[in-house]
Amino acid sequence: MFEGLTQSLQRVFKNLRGYGKLTERNVQDALREVRLALLEADVHYGVVKDFIARVREQSLGQDVLDSITPGQQIVKRIHDELVRLLGVERRDFDLSARPAGILLLGLHGSGKTTTAAKLAARWKREGRRPLLAACDLRRPAAVDQLRLLAAKIGADFAAPAAGDTVPAAGRRALDRARAEGHDTVIYDSGGRFQIDEELVGELRELLAATQPRNRVLVLDAAIGQESVQVAETFHRAVELTGLILTKLDGDARGGAALSVVSVTGVPILLAGTGEKIEDLSPFHPDRMASRILGMGDVVTLVEQAQQAVDADSAAAIERKMMSDRFTLEDLLDQMRQMKKLGPVDKLLEMLPGVGALPPEARAQLQGRPERELKRTEAIILSMTPMERRHPERIDGRRRARIARGSGATPADVNDLLRQFDRMKQMMKQLRRRQKRLPRAPM
Image 1: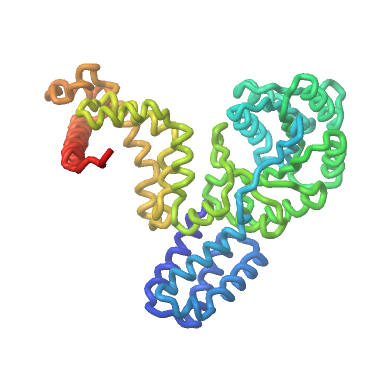
Image 2: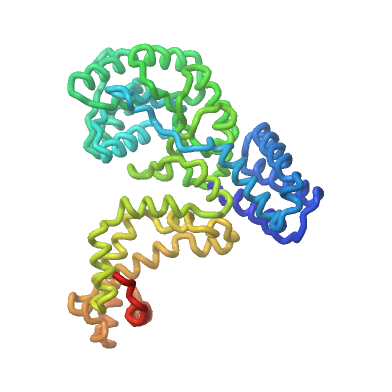
């Protein structure tokens, strides 16, 4: 979502770092470019104005202009202001009550119902007992949609009774949660294409009936500056406690994420990055600022790896790699572990520098790693168990058969075998170096 902004800022930073010494004129020119980049990303004008004023005040101090690396100092100040803009620190839901109530609000199309299911799945993984409560009684099939999602993730579902009003449906779900020992109730409320008095009145009645501590706006990050007005209106109506930004994986300009916190003072709790149930991530202002500036987000990447990769399997593969027993079957297992982390394109975006690549380079990367992995997997699966364990026995006839079975070419099979052979040679060299290293005293 922030590709355009990242690339624009990288151009500014490249010029700044190129100056041996900065002058007030250099700083003013650079900040003018930053201002244009933020406005083009659809960040609210008032937010941009305050942001540039704060960075300018800090950057024109003598400690910056006279420093050894003035360009880097200004980049750091822009990073710090972005973190401040996004909310300073990670914030989470208040789950101290029992049952903890979470009321999801938002306009039509923002992704409330899907987000409700994502939240339930997330808390189920953490050992909680969530109850999904259908309180959207106006949108056709909204109740059925939530029921299907609840069944998909194995969460309990509270349906409204015939003739229920919205507050009655909410109260019924709360009573059930207390009776059955659920520790969390997620209320999926109704939406509109725009906020009106009827919607506000309905939400206030639901609030009075259920009294949830968490009143969270699900906001479509792709709607740009309009998101600020939507957030402000909901905040005045029900006093929001948090925001969830959806569609952060889209190609829109992303100004919502950089505007709503500053304008409303309400923190972003989570970010939706796809349609899958697991595509809901904690929102860390410092990590998001680093990604916007092209610095990557290695911490999140490591956290995802820890959650998705089986430590015992990884240790077993490592032992095989260091004992010359690593086969194509082990490579296949390793690839399948990687796939649990999510699409390769998303993982690449977390690596430093990738977000700042020029458009043509990013276009070449787009989807390519995923295609390569799928092709490699298909080739290995077309081999017999013996061939996976002893690739050196694969002759021309076997290559042709493997290529036919995988939809690849014999040249593709040759490339894979050569790469695997190079990998084993590198591991052999690494083992030799380790043997030459002196052992630490016991």
